[in-house]
Amino acid sequence: MSSSPIATPSPPPTTVSSPPYDRIKAVKEFDETKSGVKGLIDSGIKTIPSFFIHPPEILSDLTPRSDFPQPEIPTIDLSAVHHSRAAVVEQLRSAASTVGFFQVINHGVAPELMRSVIGAMKKFHEQPADERKKVYCREMGTGVSYISNVDLFASKAASWRDTLQIKMGPVPAEEKEIPEVCRKEVMEWDKEVVRVGDILLGLLSEGLGLGEERLTELGLSQGRVMVGHYYPFCPQPNLTVGLNSHADPGALTVLLQDHIGGLQVRTQHGWINVKPLDGALVINIGDLLQIISNEEYKSADHRVLANPSNEPRVSIAVFLNPGNREKLFGPLPELTSADKPSLYRDFTLNEFMTRFFKKELDGKSLTNFFRK
Image (cartoon, rainbow, N blue to C red; front, side, top):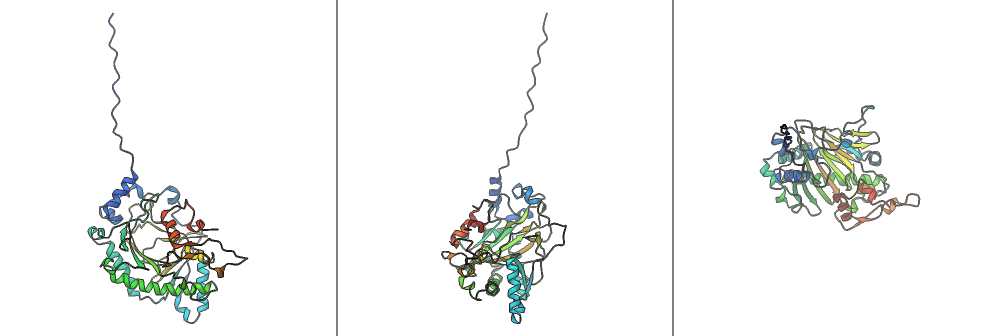
């Protein structure tokens, strides 16, 4: 009896699996375009690359609470210093010792300069990519560098912004190295920031019960870096941020923002918006001033949301730092006592800034690292 042949099973269909996502490779390729997120938008993308997507715990916290009226950070009129100096000192002391963020108006900077420096920075970022590429660099060798995300290779997720960094002191970038499209405005802006910064440091010094010169004599405005941030339209603003939550490491930050909005500060009420106020400068206390003041003043975490507007957001921050990076800093002796001992050890600015940029903090704030 003949047996019927046994059918052999056909081989399973071959599936072509896509290679696993290589984040490092994707980030490197993006960096090598030297065109930033502006380049991505100009290419017509409708979805953001995966390495810009932030984890759910960050994204779920992007909307301010709606169960109470949104408070606003204090606004302080500096022109009142001529007839009510003590009142202005108290307003600054109160703001610096609570929220760590405030806006100042009537500071003496010409409105025309404020408009022109924002316009010049916008022009830089909106030049053809080939022009921007000329200064794209992750090293500040010449004192000028255009980059997207200073921490691009270290952060868990990238942020939707590009930045022009310019070193203004103690050894400033050579004038010819500053892109011509914004050179004149940058130089003028730096002079005004130093003037306003020194006035504020004098008033904040008095707020600590010290002489007007005590903070300025530490050279806290001599080391300066100016950063011009550009936040273009983001097609998926609910998946990323414009600038990660952080506290500034230096003494004081002087920020000029345009009318678009998106800056937020963390307070006891949660995240609140720092609403653009025409003609105002936004000032925030940095970690170094928190330490020098032995925590009389407080630095504050802040962030910028990704920009959902078709119009780009432009802001210019100048970080005021000591000029001497080898000098020891710590709480001022006049602010420590048996009742309030020094909360921090002494350190050089070099050590302090190295810690900040190396991201060796494991979730701890920079100030905690230097706490006694």
